[in-house]
Length: 312
Image 1 (cartoon, rainbow, N blue to C red):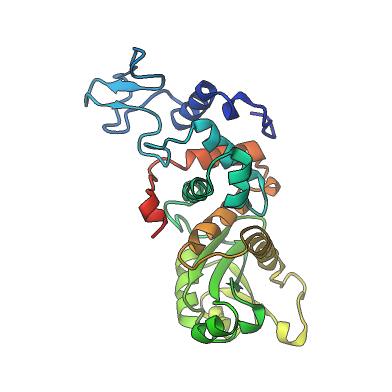
Image 2: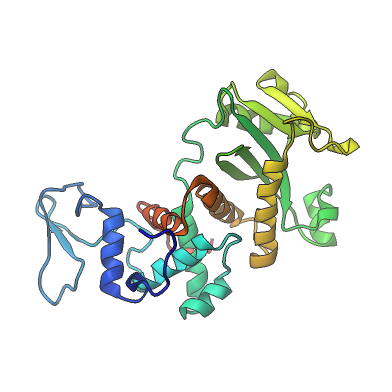
């Protein structure tokens, strides 16, 4: 696959090319039954009445397409538009709004909004923390930021913040230098809750970097912990800094403020998954736009989402 995706590629305009492209991603070894897992006894169905892309399993006697069990199942949106929307969201560093998708791919706004949330679901890891981050010789930075509220209100309680100019939601990020990020929407940042999170998600031999916030003061009990004192204007001391996680937050907040403008508490975790996905599969880790889009398409299996589930 080329390093970048040519928007004149037939997979974005030709339904047959799009179908074969998706089948090759989902079934690299050939068609497999999504119901019973049979591989050897699956055959394509002929006949004009069925249309292309249908298969039959001789073991469980069921018919299926590659879309079964994915976010595309029973969708009336052409596969060409799914692939194009996925590429646009994966190639845009700060994301792409549903209004922009609606204008670019020629679908109603509500349809584009639902598509975007389905694509974000494909980007989400099924297991938020499959393996501990960090380890011996590795450095991890952690920090939190406030989303959707005004900066001056970040120390207000939530009810007062809503009354004086916008509610605040907290995003907590763990970033491994030169590696990946995990971000989660948390209700509060206390030493107890953050310690539980870090102990469960970090290897014990990790070198931990934080700012001087009070909730991190006891982290030296579990990790080799270094602090930079932002309160006195200290931001770098040798290799002690939190510039990596703050750089990630700058991308996240510019995307939410400049592209999405507002993100509800209900859907914040989905947007965090989107920004994590792009960061974890960035060009700095030798992942191209085309490869990133392919990984997002591969992630749709087992994640069927209905409009009612997305809209709460």
